[in-house]
Image (cartoon, rainbow, N blue to C red; front, side):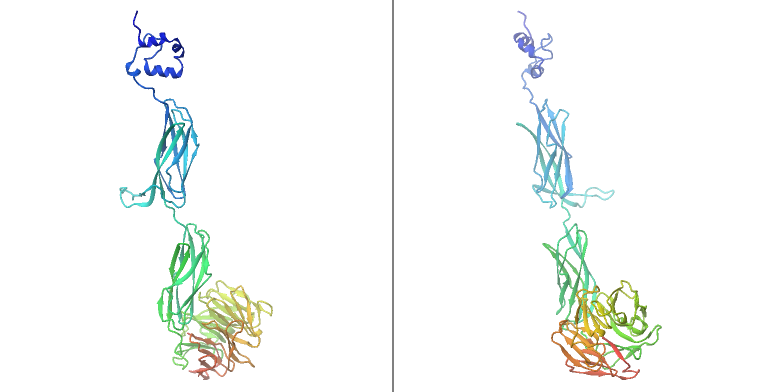
Length: 569
């Protein structure tokens, strides 16, 4: 019998094999083990193929790009490709492991059915805002300068995590890896903007306005405190805590109250803001000068001689005058109120010229005026007293208009007024004097209604009054460093100086004196005031002890005609 090739024997011996030869699984078998063509005379035995094994159907997983860099809280996107191998055609379910702490991964779609051309899914990795580390290694991205090598100092430190994407189909599995570099996100925070400089005498107060600014969306409450205060000083805040809006600001005021024992020195009081674990600081500057004493300069405005006087002390030493009757430069017509600011500039209420005046010093240098007659904006009807607060805002007692006016400076910017003539709430009779305390509360000597009024601000908030038997035709009002209130009652029958502890009138004390003018109380509690017989006096306290006087009637040295306003610098 003729010897047959092995491939021919398969076809002869098993007819059913010949029938099934065209089916895919058996065709794969013959393709692997025989030369082409079942039943063809050209088919011969292939010993190399018959000794092999049939390759299994499978798939491969790849992830691209190999690395993505994001800021904590942002998302990174990858393309996952699943390639079929050896005719694999099953569904492959995708999962991810090894992501940074707090990160999550999501596939779209979560399952693919690959072909030999591949199937893709998008993997989105969402990182947490904390940028926490998990099975990570530190890395740094570098931005080289133009024309320079990429080698050099590193910037933008980040954390690299290698994660794994796994595809599973029944018992089959394949995986691929990629890196994610997470740069820590900027943490929400805040900063304090300060840095002003104030000069006060021991026993006086200084106020600082400052802002708290949100950084990176911070919107928490910030508690305020102060350190590095000078000896004998205390600090208060209004408000005591602030909450800036996200990426916005909040404002507050620090008031430092010195005492008579506070030494003359320059210090750097520090504002401290605390919110949870966050603490921020900013320093102000405080210059404390020697306490006011009997040797401090005294300034007096004279309504009869139409001038202002400066002397070194109550003895009249260093007597200097400025001004004369008129309405021009260097002239006054009934200068009733006087105030000397910390920068030593002098402010005068020039009553019958219906204006206020500011000069740099007693020589009259820097003469500046503001105001004209009337009852509108930038107008006065006999301004009778003047004060300047810790923010250099100017307050005027607009007597015959029955109102208090505040302006930001001598241009009249920021004009605001409160009050009108009348006897109702928020109305006054004749306003003769004003005072602004360390909290910028405003005290008003309402001569026409025989009362002292106090308001918190220029809106008239929390209006409260003090009158009755204690107060009679008050010409002036003063608040000392202990927040006690003084008033000079000008008209009979109760011509006297009155002192009370507060606006309730508690613990009243009196000093009887003839027609007292505007009083001033220094940091040692000594009381200065002009009186009707053309003198100025100083007493040690409200009992009248230690009375010293200066002056006779006239227009020469150490003489007065109608001393009215007084200020001790």
